[in-house]
Length: 83
Image (cartoon, rainbow, N blue to C red; front, top):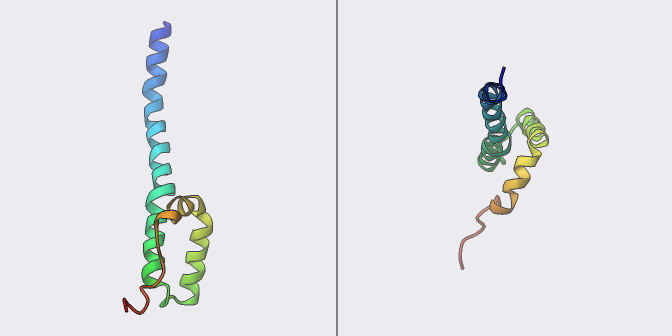
């Protein structure tokens, strides 16, 4: 087997692996943390104890992605309005 054939064969096999890593990384670092922020922002004052426990577990699990978006999101309440 020539070197070119070996390189071509290994490159064709590595593309699905690289794609899978990119997909899993996108899910872990972007999509699920944004969903968690959305969920917590909408349900914070209405959560039951088991829902809150599961959300805290997800925050622990997806902490790196949450840290990436933390500087750009403001989850504070709107307040009393402008005076």
